[in-house]
Image (cartoon, rainbow, N blue to C red; front, side, top):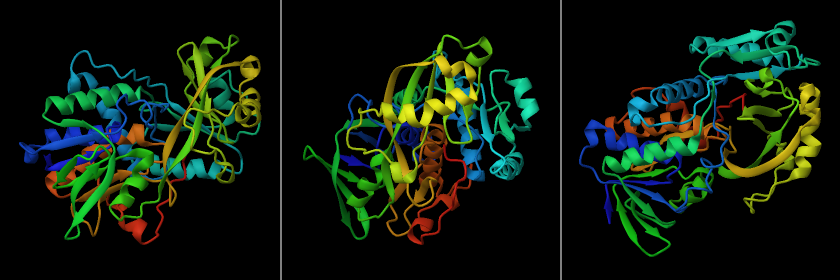
Length: 392
């Protein structure tokens, strides 16, 4: 098989890249192949994401990526048809800070305002008035996304992008890339585990948590690894209607929760020295909930004292160990290799816009919508982190 452009990974990032590549005017008639090893699309980060979308970042590029995805979510029916539904709930994010961390919220708020984000800083008295279910002990400041933040269903959006890509002529190939063959310093062929070979004029690596491994097949050291995260489903019969309409709320200690129908979901990123073993995807650590999450939930939301965990699941962040920001762009030495990985938990909300950015790079030779040059591989090669302060 011959592909003008091959994409490894058919999660939300790779599917978006395929969709926008197929729609790009300069790439009409090009053979685009989307390769995915998971036939059911159930094991990747997209399928197991909580689907949050926020503009409360410290890096302007992250804000702009989320704003671009927001526009796509709001125009889903226009992009994909009248039946398109990604279950977008624009209920906001509420980030809480202790006295020690309040200056970070203020500094980030300046960046967010400069990017046009509708984020409002609220003192404890204003927080208690706006969110009567909230206990503000130890809280010095809150940042609330009054519009343009919320959550959606990532598998539904990924499926719409894949469907749109296939309708535009993209071939979806099931298989695992086992080898990347190089010639004259460029990607030449992909060899699948089945033995099939695909000649590739250009290659996009969008393999989520496994992108570091896939990049290694091309001799590229990409510091992206799988980091396991748990999401717990809660039943709280004492929850008021106001609490059931709550924004996604993040406690100063990192515990987060949000409504999910008549239930709630919650989670927390562990400390660096307590990362769970990533080998068994479906194993959930319930002791982590009891020790690290439940006490914070009960203290912050008194109604949660009587909650019950009714279900849970695990998934992977495609974690960039250098700076927790995505790597988006063309490899500086391998001219036909493009990277879109390392989103560190932000892939669902930034993936659609990142896929469009890859299409711009290949079709136009440059970023035309959002300048993502700072997210390029060069900072990885030079060990120059571009740190994101708001990683949840």
